[in-house]
Length: 340
Ligand code: AOF
Ligand code: ZN
Image (cartoon, rainbow, N blue to C red; front, side, top):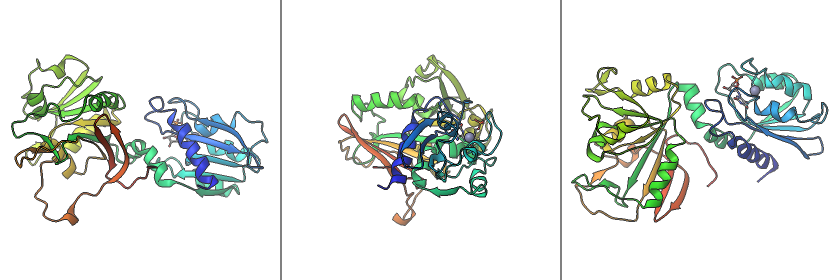
């Protein structure tokens, strides 16, 4: 690993400290080296609406300490007046010889790179795919005005989510199911379908839940209604596409309500429809060391009659770990990179 990669990974680690505190803004960390190559300051974006990472980092230094040095930041420095003045102006004032950036900002208001270059500062990029992975939610929100969608599945080794009877309790271990409770908290919303509510009667405890219930078939006595705010997408408030709720519209409506990330827990029908519409960003798949061995067992994705392997949806594995008896794989549909 060269030094640029080393310090950019340091920025990623600093940026992650802002998780849960800065959203919907990006996770940003910053490291400054003096002209001798010593780390003289580190900082990160700590709180939504607060100082950006670069400002937090540079303000810890005396006026000339960064002069001739290098500033590392995982996102292009901003050049606009938002809640704070442009970071690029402060950077230029402090005269580093070089700025190393992870990724270009997707915010159309930001054009910091050309300002730095115009001021005679050298700009390099490093670990761009990793930087994009870190801010994948921000990128999706900013570029598509849609929430980032993660689909969670729990399958046997032969890819089944339930027996043909619908019985699915339990495929994965207690530890894996506890991990799911923790994961849910990282998302603004849980989404499920009327089919799942009717078949499994799950509690799905969360502050905000979206139930896709075109024909309003779910009963208010179902456990899911006992807690949290509920948004029901039905044919009353959502247009139909091919006779089903238009899922893109549902997601857009959620985004308008301030939902930046959605965790979907459902059966094969909704999962297959979301996949077909290209609305899934990432899949968290738990695989249990069990084999159902039944052709009529239910699959994760209700299919689309695809006949060639070359037509598979291609994913990129970003993370895998053993949890209890099971394996968790996190895979993205876009080719981000994460250190495995
Ligand atoms: C952050 N933190 O460390 C950096 C950001 O509304 P403002 O003024 O906070 O500006 C937010 C935008 O600034 C954000 O969308 C992103 O484009 C840019 N950079 N934002 O919250 C940071 N560097
Ligand atoms: Zn800024």
